[in-house]
Length: 457
Image 1 (cartoon, rainbow, N blue to C red):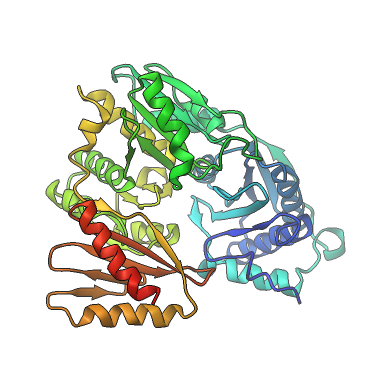
Image 2 (image 1 turned 180 degrees about the vertical axis):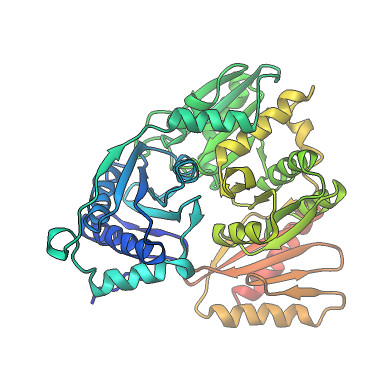
């Protein structure tokens, strides 16, 4: 029996094409998903499929669709799409969905993000484990051999509807003119940005050509090296702002007019303030590695901050449980109640543009109120004994007066001077991920090095 644990992960399906991910495997995954959906609701009749610009994506999407239709469900192909465009289709059409993408991973990877109708995520505990077991054991035949009427495949273009819906949620028509450099990284932002952004936004495109080989840089703006071209272009163009999207364009990173990156925590706080202005007293979700500034600012504007674990499934579930209007992660995933609680980098970008367009100042001046602390970014350490190293760090700080700890996600330690750090294990590798925040960069460096000395001892 084949072991798919390295491919079917906690939140999605992802692996190297031709090794963990190939056409027979994704066909079986499609069949297993169809059977799962039918077992949950016999009325389920169809699902929607989209794919990114990777060379392998169209053939993998076609193989997946064959598995779905063989089990009697219809498939609606939306073709080239960003992940949030697929979520839009799932929400608007009220259909389960499958998005073929490996997001920010290098060209040799591909995968699938699955959701139920209304863009509700399918994760390890909500279906992926069942799908994995079914594929490993062998999915029963459908079609003629299994006595099932084969489903149909149709095509539907939803790009214009997606763009119109986002512009309804955030109206830029009253904005002052803004010159904005957008780095699509040869990913799906090159597909969606031209459809969504127009006057009064003057877009300066950077790497809009769809190319799954990523010839200019990896489509992963979380890595500082992949922002360098955007930073230079913003300054050279005299632009008001820079935006960078990852490969499937569900995450958006912001660079101010000086070419300086803006913290995703600051973007979370900015969008939260806008959401609270429309829905006073609402709940806003933030994960455990966002800045202290986020809950502070939410509270100052009359909202209720709720802290959760890292990961979209936790954010979306907590949003559903609390009725939250918005949620943000420090990885630059932003979730909106009015977007079926799904994440959309484009919608976050529209909020930033609207706020900047309504202000009379620069982006750096606008963000000053939302950037209150210094942060380390994520620092990874490869260790032999992950639980043992976490316990060593816990013990090192437990002896200190005024220290508070929690285990919501890994280990979070809060010090009396309001500095803090979070140490989380990787889901897939023998890694510990450290995030530190303090009053200034010198304090961050001291605390970071202090923790790493224990982690790497």
